[in-house]
Length: 87
Image (cartoon, rainbow, N blue to C red; front, side):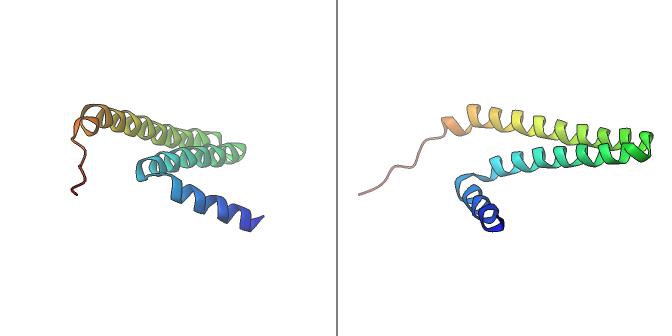
């Protein structure tokens, strides 16, 4: 099972670009923080709510990053001339 996990991570690293990896990292971070906040809420409700606010901030960073990259892609990168091969 560990080898399958490592293989899937290697495939993920090879098939995704840096922007996609960053977005995935934001999502994993948000999910992990929400899970930790759930456990903390069992013991201290106020602290659990504070930790969920941190997850909301990370989710906001995910959204801002997604919008910024899409605007950059559509308005700048797609209009750059592609490099032509010289023979």
